[in-house]
Length: 361
Image (cartoon, rainbow, N blue to C red; front, top):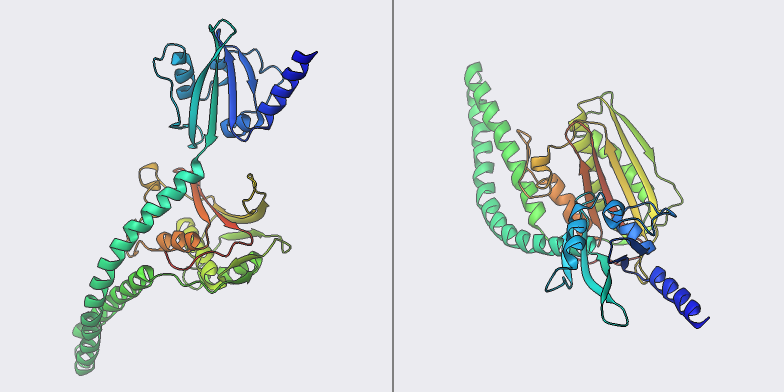
């Protein structure tokens, strides 16, 4: 009876653990898998899982299969190692331990692992902030040096154009010079805005109102044409502590990208919902998802779209998405992108409910 109680307690304990647990016997049969392991591995639980060979249970996770298959022959077992799960892109930290019987014979192995994706993303954001700080100092210096000559070029070209009223060909060239100078100056202004530390004006903010105000902002810069913007944002979503103006810029910048990609066709869908906290002491999140059915982003550039000054547009500054990420980071949030060539693009912004945020970066 005592062993039965201990067995039940053991299973309850493993099931309740906040780390993923996968235990197998020496012959490779699965003994136990807890709920957190199912969640991290994105495997649907089945009653027949216990007793399946781990290679069948983990058939979509080849790196884990190889690691477990060699685990019984390793001289040094992995301890606090890290691995990226290829199907989902999640990063896990894991420890592999061998299970011994009363005679100290190895009769199984236990894998303990934790989802470190958000930790890695936070570290990447910190590295990005460091790079941006150095880049910002250089860009601000260059922008200030360029801004004054550009203004002089525009003014002098304007004066010269007035004096050439009888030369239509020359006036046309001077008009082109003025327009190009204005475009260059607009890029300089955008660079200065980007490198300037963000100062949030925090207040209780409705995400539904943010989306409502952001749509006309985007439409003033890019014509909607025949593109349908389908918005479902519940008005009763919890408010967030954020900067309404800055969040409008986030949504409008994402909308501008989507409208440009669709070229007056297709559908943009905007959805929002509450994502409950998965860990004690962590705030719930508001999830804002914006997807389009456009051409998508090629795989070879998808990981660079948030980099400052990276652009595929002939007249783009490459700062739109960099500014989006900067503002989201300042709100202690995060932004993810899912895309594939020919399959559209989805940006998902996560913002904490009731978190004070921080100023600058």
